[in-house]
Amino acid sequence: MKFVDEARITVIAGKGGNGCLSFRREKYIPRGGPDGGDGGDGGSVYLLADEALNTMVDYRYQRSFKADSGQSGAGKNCTGRGADDLVLPVPVGTTVIDADTEQVLGDLTEPGQRLLVAQGGFHGLGNTRFKSSTNRAPRQTTPGSEGETRDLVLELKVLADVGLLGLPNAGKSSLIRAVSAAKPKVADYPFTTLVPKLGVVQLGTDRSFVMADIPGLIIGAAEGAGLGVRFLKHLARTPLLLHIIDCLPVDGSDPVESAVKLEQELLTYSNAFEQRPRWLIMNKCDLLTDRDVSDLKQRFSRQPEFLGRPLFEISALKSEGTDALVLAVMEHVEEYKESVKHDAEFAILQSALFDQIQKQGRVRIDELAEQRRAARKAQLAAADDDDEFDVDVEYRG
Image 1 (cartoon, rainbow, N blue to C red):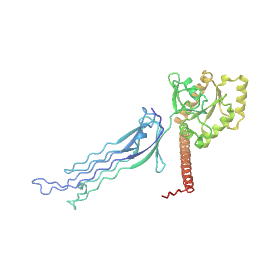
Image 2: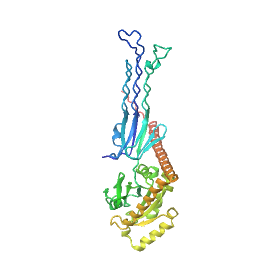
Image 3: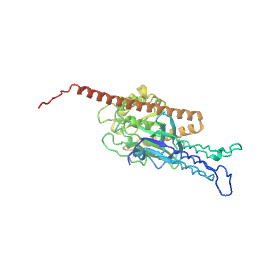
Image 4: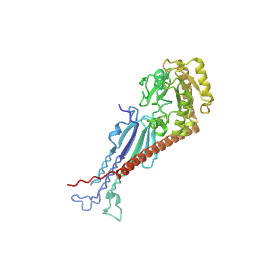
């Protein structure tokens, strides 16, 4: 199934049914009075978090969804039938944004969670409602109100306790294969992983956490190079980031310099990542001598960007050092969840941090989109200018 992590849709709630203008007309009842019934309410539109879904592909081709309208009222005080609500399933982890106001309407982070995105129209009133002691034969009715119409942006961000960050071929997929049952593709060429992958790391019967394998980022990702901006947003919900470092890159680049540049890419996308814990994971240490590994660790420890960071030495391919890493991550995840559960101030701070990363990321994505549009306009304008200097050929018979 194709992985789609963003969709734009239009939702239209149903119109309320109109009120009825009617009078009772029966034999032997000369003054029956008004008996026009109310209309029915229009259907509302809800989004439902469905754990069976993991992509937005269903909304790639159908973009407009409309709920049914309520029926109009009828005589004999018959109320029109209210329309059923329209419920649209979306993957767990979906953020719902109003495309016009850029307001975040809600986050669907729990299975079964529902979010009202378009309110159905209110029913119209029949003339029976306007009967009074001084108005015995009212001819007033009200029409049903229109339902809300909204343009929505649905953004899917993977829900994971730990996110893997790194350059292509750093060993992220190898690590998640070594510590979980997930089997992402592993090969000896860059960009083997093209979509985020999730793996559950199990420690015993009742201890586990979810790890997200994010496709590799390249230098310039925050400026729109490659698909980095699209993938960076998936790190927003991960409380812990593991920066996987290739200790022996095939291109001969310096691991420390590459790690510093990727760190800058992350903070360029959103400086709020500065407040997220980020551990350094030196991978492929089995290919180096003990002295080379020690020298590399000292170089990392002297970098201002990495001061005080936990640092682990592993070989994902041979599963060396992964047990200690997994145990440390498990302890950190459990402490984080306990803090969120019992410390209200900490929970509010973490929620605000997520909102800040999400907002800054969306602004960044919009800026890049605007830059691409401006570049295309400039190219078209340049092409038009070139046409002015074309030679006109006149043919005479």
